[in-house]
Amino acid sequence: MNFSEFVSAGVSVLADFDRSAAMAAGLSTARVRDLARVHHTYFGPTQFTRKQREALAAADGMPVDQVVLIERKLTAVGDAAERWRIRLDLVRHRGSYRALTKRIARLIHVPVSPPKPSCRFSRSKAGMRTMILTYNERDLADLEHLLRQMITSDNPAAAQMAEALFTLLRDGDSLPHARPRPIVLVPVDDHVRIHAGNGDEVTLILTDGTTMTGAEYLHHEFGDTLEVAAFHPQHGPVNLYHTKRLANTKQKTMSKLVCPACAFPDCKATAETTQTHHIHAWAHGGMTNMDNLAELCPFHNGVNADNRNGPFGYIDNAGARIHWIAPNGVKVPMTTPGAMELLFG
Ligand SMILES: [Zn+2]
Image (tube, rainbow, N blue to C red; front, side, top):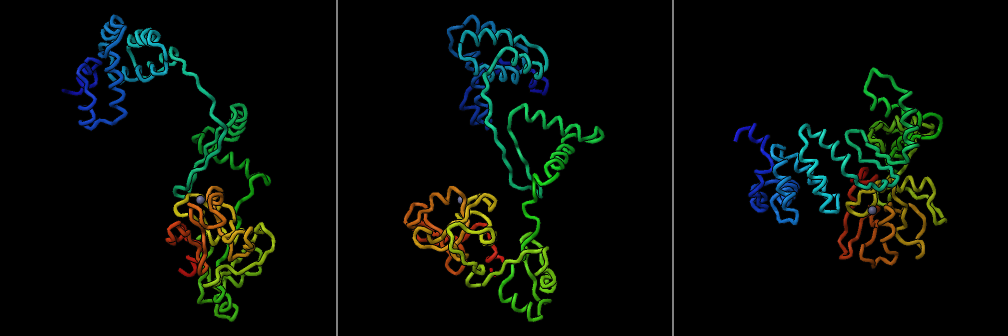
């Protein structure tokens, strides 16, 4: 078979179609399903034998891809007689695939239910993220209209509209920067060495992935450009005792440094969405101290039983390293390393 025979092959090549042979030959399951549907229509048993013969004759010369498209779209039509009526109209189409798509849209009306409002954020890819927003058409039309007024025709619109949207959001205080400044992670003994005047040999890690020397740290420590979080190698984050049930802002920040994602293994929730959890339950006398806090996503916070005998295991922090203890007692470290792992290994 040469290429012109291949592209002009019509529905007749499917006369002896066989599902198992198609699967065995390595066709995709979606393709096999499409071809089987066409084969069943044109060569399978039906009450409409006269219309079947008529359609087969009319489809002669129509590319298989177009016949496949027609049958795929006809699955939305419930009544068999109605399907034959529409099919006999569509198989007479001669022209582009695109034109056929339009003709189908005019003849087959699929009821659509409106999607629910939603806003989704992807994970980062090379420093970029994608946001997908579904919302009322009037409100989004207003937004699009406004953004289009803010761009020029010299460059592609999509990139300019992304910039324009953030110009709008960042204008004033409507979208504050979530992390305006990095936090310095300082082992307490380094803190002592730095203050004793040996700061130049010490390299400190910042939460944004950068580093600074102890001397730079001293220079900044009491300024307003950096926040400092100190950690003891055995006891973990330096304690801020607190007698209230809810952790305060500083404790939550520290807890998210120690536990930058949900502590359950392989859970994808980042500290952006986690809740601060009492390792020893507040109800059982557990304090809101740094040595009793871990981050869990709302789901795992819900299933993590206070009595530690639940089917989901529990969170513990022996040696100031947060672990998940499986129901069979196996100790599993956090998937995402936190400040203690970064500082002390
Ligand atoms: Zn989780």
